[in-house]
Every structure is written in structure tokens, then in C-alpha cells.
Length: 380
Image (cartoon, rainbow, N blue to C red; front, side, top):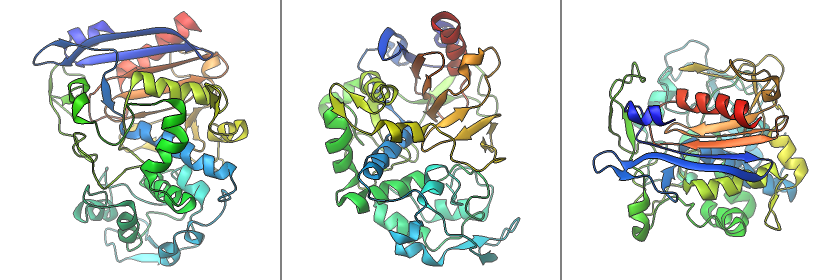
């Protein structure tokens, strides 16, 4: 991993390897920031981006265990604003060119990014542009206001038809509020962060800990991201992490540390229980990494295809090993964030790992895949 720092492809890396639930290796490389070359610290704070989605999915599964909803409940049962959703006509560039909804999106569709919602990231359709124009996830907004805006826009496809990375986990965060009667952050703290002693995980970093925040960078050439060279990168979508904000994004807003997120992953590996605290039932954890998509649906992003991958209630699941990986990688479940915070669990191999950096914006990070191959080779 040191070569990625030496070649100025990343500013830092922090990694944990687990065998079962035991941490067998923890180390860091690089710098808190390139400018000062302050060495990386063990308790550095990272922008988690889409690793937040797994936490949100776990929060929803806590309420599933308590009978708050059924997976095939229509979302409109809890969010009445979604009763009149329309679907953008296939191939249309006119947002007013819609067809009727054939089947309402369900809670299962939200978990699996198959509900038909857009995200405002890929700009491949007029709805993405509307997300940007209307500041769908504006920091001055709330999850409730986000829902009101979403209800006026069409879906990209009929629910259940395909996989489309989307705002659906932010919708799930709003549902956590509705089902629990608490704000999203209150629920996370009471039911996940406090019981697991995840003391540094939140939607912002208190001033006393600002010195522990890793600097965020992007490649100097986004078209060829493996070109050596980095430049400072603003915190798009999540906004400043230096102070509290109104919008608590269930899809990408959390900050955390390697220690905190390792504890969360240990809880998942251990079937929903850790340090004497039962967070989720073992049956619900099993559902989280069991395919929930109908047969034939491909999991792919506009910028990256994930071959032989299916999707559970929060995790992507591999049906075949990637290049250079053993057969024990089959069944591995994982997800990551676009600034380079990746975590994965391999039940067959009995190993798991986390590799964090701050290098936006990408959904495929070569250093993560090389690290994974090495972990399988050495620890598997």
C-alpha cells in the first residue's frame, strides 16, 4: 500500500484485517494532509460517504425486528406523498413525458436501489438535473423537505425493473424517523452508536476534534484517475463536516473512525451482537447479505460494472470471485464510499477488512482491490 502514497495517488491509508471478529492487523500509511505531511494518526476521522448506507440499513432492520414494517409494504403506506408517483417514459428527455406507475415502490425496493428513484449524480436523465436544480439534498433542508420535493418528480423506471444507485437510502432514513418517532440522528445514537461505543461517529465533527479530520483530495485528472497527483477536494453533497447541519443524509452524511466502523462491522460479522449488546437479530443480518433482487437484474453504475453481483438489504454480494481472488470470495458482501472508505466481509474465508482513505470521487478504487487480493492471499 505504501506505493500508492509514494506515487501521490492517495494522501493516506488506514487498514484493519479481521479473522472472525478478531482484529489481526491494523496499520496506517501516509499523511493527515499532504501540505504539512503530518503523519497519519490511528484515530483519524474520515468522511464515510456511502458507507453510511450500511448503517442506515441496519437502523431500519432494528425497526423491522420490532415489527414496524414488512419488506413488501408499499412506501406510500408510510409516506402518503408518494401515492401519485409517475414514471419517466423510457428514453425521454422531457420530465413531463411520463407513464402511469404499474406497481408502487416497496420498502424492499428502497433497500435494494430498485425503486426507480434517481440520485442527481450521473446526469444521464432530466430527473438527475432536477435533483441538482432543486437542491434535493441541500444542507439547509431536512429529510421531510426532501420527501416533499421527491414526490413531485417522476421515477426513472417501474419499481423492481432494474438496479439504479439512488436516493432510496435517504428515503429509508426518513422512514426510520417515521417508524421510531425520533430524529434520524437520535435513533442512530440511541440504538447503534451509544450501545457500540462509537463515540466519533456523527454527521459533523466537534471543534475539539477538528485536528483529527483527514484532508480530502481528488485526482488531478478525473478522466484518468490513476495519473499521479492530488488536489484539495471540497466536501460535495455532504457539505461542511465542521459544524451541525439540518440535513442528515442516510445515504452519505456520516463521519467516523477506523475504530468505530470496525466495531460496527464486528457487530455485523457476529450476527447483530457485540460487546454484550444485541443491535439486530441474526435473521435480519442474514437478510442484509442475502440477494433481494429478482433474477437477471444487474448491479452496475454508469461508471463501473459490477459483474456477478447481486444486492441484499444494504450490501452488495459477490456471486463469483474477482480476478486474483479465491473461490472463498463467493458470498463476500461489501460496500464503500466515493471518497475511498471500503469494507467487506467474507463468510466462507472467515476474514474481513476495511481500507480507508480520502480520495474523491470514485466508485472503483484500485488500491482497495489490490488490498483485498493481498488479504485473501495472506490471511485467507
